[in-house]
Amino acid sequence: MIETERLILRRFQLADAAPLAAYRNNPDIARYQAWPSPLTPEAATEQVRKYSEQDPEQPGWFQYAIELKADHSLAGDLGVLLHDNRMQAELGGTLTPALHGSGYAIEALQAILEHLFFNKGLHRVSAECDTRNTPSGRLLERAGFQPEGRRPEFTQNINTGEWTDTLLFGLLASRWRELTAGARNSRTADQSGRWAR
Image (spheres, rainbow, N blue to C red):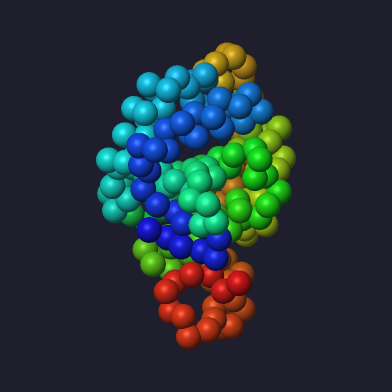
């Protein structure tokens, strides 16, 4: 659905159930997220089925599967919560731990931001993360998000019962246009909507 140099962001398929469960069951990943863990094979299949039926054009969540072009494996997922006004959205995502530090997360994030701001004309995109998850906070800031606050003990982990602080981030379309103006001006004749690399 959305293509970058190394990735395809697409609708989930049933074959994605096992790799989805594998990275979502990793305790280093699950501690920062709101899903039940462990995720059984049956629950993963049901989750993937639900994801495959979501509509990215309608308000609500749409979960993109992040596929590596090199071997067509599932690298992670990126969720977009489109607000009822269709002018704002929230993001949340996960990358399999083996691929951390590879640049795939920023590549996927930049692609979805271009899609939301340039193709869909959104005004604002928000994101949040656990304060302990410093790599995610740094990733959001690298993509242009600005810190907007901290909510003390705002999120309760459904697996451990632990209450954690949440960092808030936001990105306006006007700031995104300023940050990407150079990349847009240096595009080649390829007008597919992909980021210049």
